[in-house]
Image 1 (cartoon, one colour):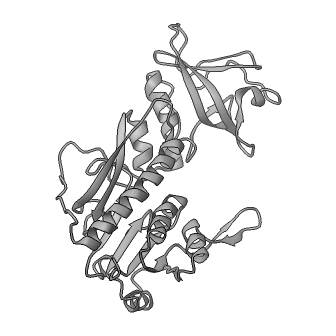
Image 2 (cartoon, rainbow, N blue to C red; image 1 turned 135 degrees about the horizontal axis):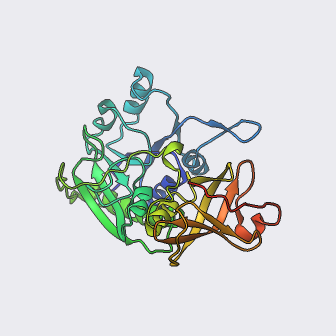
Image 3 (cartoon, one colour; image 1 turned 180 degrees about the vertical axis):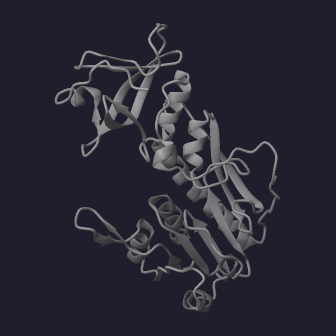
Length: 311
């Protein structure tokens, strides 16, 4: 353990518990590599990443390269004399970076690899109606998310979960698996189990806004899973009476009727129901353009919706 010199690479909140658990347990993190500060808010003020903020609180040097292949950055990285690199929620690394430390570079991924390789494993697991997912640590190699598996931990997905609640649990569980992995590397007992490369594998590609429109023609549970899997971010959306809305929460109402999918029922006070293939979805939380997120009751205090169908 005392011989380990670790470089930690990560950017968002998801990576912070993993960095903190290494520091808390006495591992020597010699530097953090994270994204450059980004403009945020109305004033476009440059804002550090959550991982940078954590590193600075603990007095850890921070590198913020714009180009991971630049000779200047590679020289900086080499000068740290790290023998292990830990990656949690960071960008894809060139071989010159991940192959640098003698003990390798491992990554934490929020799925049970080889399932859900890609940028959005938490979202896709819920969208696809999975009842279980987990976290995996694995050694980086050329093809993304395909390196030898070190450890995995499983996590159930309940019908009340959305991407946000599952994200929070996997963030904490992942930190413990990162700690377990670093301890195994330090002890020289780290497993390396080859992944299944092809076959019946479900991908988890990056999700863009155009992919997030709700299809009311599909069965209710699939539409509900879609909403859950995109809540709170990037958020499923629809148009109601020509207006754009994000839908964050809904419930299924099993009522057979002859209305076409996309039809709307509402009293403009307490409920908004949208017809799906096999029933209705009751919208419970939504957000209009330029507005804050609100419950359906809050929404109707200042808005009305006609019963024209939305398809």
